[in-house]
Image 1 (cartoon, rainbow, N blue to C red):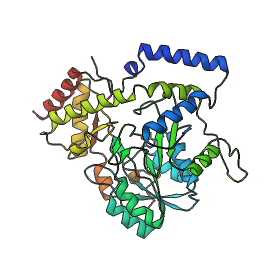
Image 2 (cartoon, protein in one colour):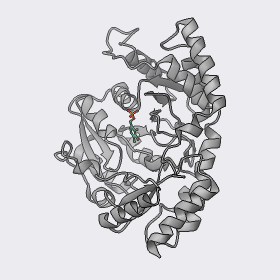
Image 3 (cartoon, protein in one colour):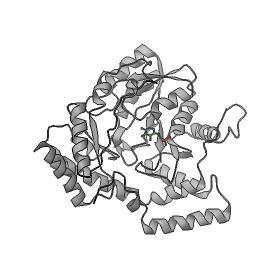
Image 4 (spheres, protein in one colour):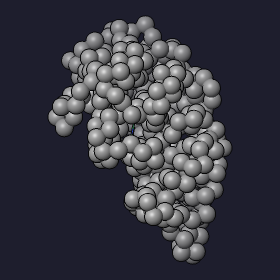
Length: 365
Ligand SMILES: *Cc1c(COP(=O)(O)O)cnc(C)c1O
């Protein structure tokens, strides 16, 4: 049988469906469609799980980034540093509030934001904030970034859209003093039945400000808000899925371990193996030598009914709508186009993993 890249069928198994149907009926009976009790229960549980004082649900992961920038008082025209290897939304959030993205280069082996480039861009571009991305699920070097940024009062927003379940050396993602944002888009590790997102913070005042911004500026006559509330039904789904997420993330890690064992001698680059224990394994990228090799391996796998994804075919600085922004781009542009992600959802069986690794090895035989 063909292996799916995302397995929604097993994720939403019979027992889970029954549980959700009951919760949705309850919400219909109550007529509590927006910011209902599951919102508050999820916010409480998720904050505890991630080591944060507050969790604020919002409408999606891009809003979570935008609202974080607004909460930090980033103004139109301010410059915000972002890595080139990330999903488009990281740049979009900066542009949507009228700020200017500046590219910070990435580590050539991982695609994570590079520390030396961060320091150079801070000096040269007068950055007000940076958005390190825990890309593919790997924790970015937050402690080192804090050491660079806090003496200069530069804000850090951690884009953890792909990193629920990842571990920083100091604790869970979300346990730092920075604002941390999540997306619960249906393909993410922790996912809703549509769009949802969240912001984590330790700071009472920022939490109050975020609450106001997401709900039309309510409670303030100074804040220009918006509607970025999270539906009660999405919160109920997230609240229910939170009970299973550790098992699912453990399964991803087990698959990652097996891939490392079975593929480490092949002529492509895996991520550094110390990430086996600390990544959330949202994706499992391998780096080929060239774009052609990536296309050839993808075609070979497709022929054998194994789906792959080329995240990220272009670094942000190569996209037409973002080309004009300045910064350091070299490693990111080298990294993109040569990456192929193998399936790593939580329901791959031993034989699925064996099938993937055999077909990959077959390509090089
Ligand atoms: C998915 C994602 C987002 C955006 O989330 P949405 O919920 O789709 O708005 C932002 N950043 C990264 C790195 C993502 O993977």
